[in-house]
Length: 390
Image 1 (cartoon, rainbow, N blue to C red):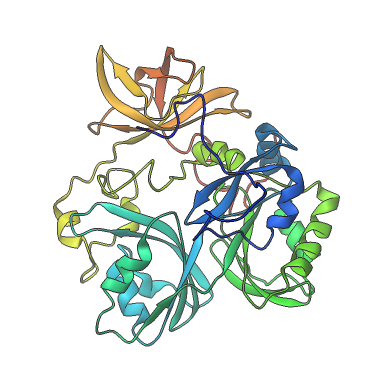
Image 2 (image 1 turned 90 degrees about the vertical axis):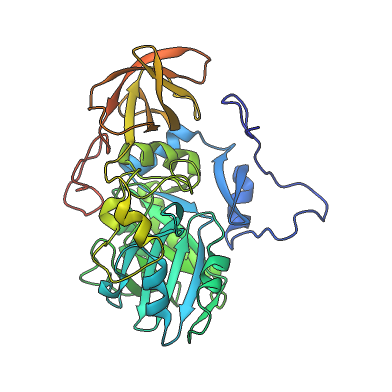
């Protein structure tokens, strides 16, 4: 049975008392979220705010589109360090990570031997023999450890927490927050170390929104209060606020950014969900290569446009038969339409194909298949090449 029915869901809130939150952890900025009435999901055993009582999801969405919003995430960085770190990671990931230079990062996906997807995330190359993999929700640590036998590499939790600053004003916030100048260049998927609150902080030009943005990594030795004081003060002139994952969820659907565990899982290959460009089949070997060599190469993933909010897990019906299921749904304040992502049973249905879509109000509403992303097709916004503030 699913945990939600499309009308209700179960989220975590803070209560008095102790016990039975064993193994879960709060990020260093939890105390700053608390007055806003956060409602958390548990992600990698970490708390990540979905929404706040103090503001609406729509308000958070417009922060992303028009100014700047901050989400303290539940992403879980694992550290890989040692002479064999690169060799192990190149075996675990489908893309050739040897091409990622120190001071750069890349999108990394890992598969089982049968080609089914395990997890995705951002691989940050800090040095020739040192990496952080900021993974989505999933048990990648045990998988990596099991394949590191006999290799000279350490894999461990560095107790690092990732926060995202996203929106058209986000780089202005960074410039105001840093004690020195923003690194030049600081291009898309770049890595840099800057001084924030008098401390050296690793930042990356990445995010979950396809807006202009950056992420900062809070380490155990940091004074998180000083870092947050600098970033919040820098964001105040721009109206920056903390936002929840629900706001980013809308924007990531518009952008065609996938969520591990819902848009893809162990039953789908990278090709099934449009991630084939992150598979280097000409690489000598990696886990899942043999299966992916033989797998169908056409994507079964599609976007949806309709006039209501698609129901996650709901059916897509065309010509009287089910042709797929909804994996993500929302109402877009910008497009003023219901939007979604769906996985089709077979590839080949063209954009514009009319369908009926199960929606959260219990109705089956007409809509169409739509190519992802739903706008900004060339991802010019996150690269800073298009200022599109609606």
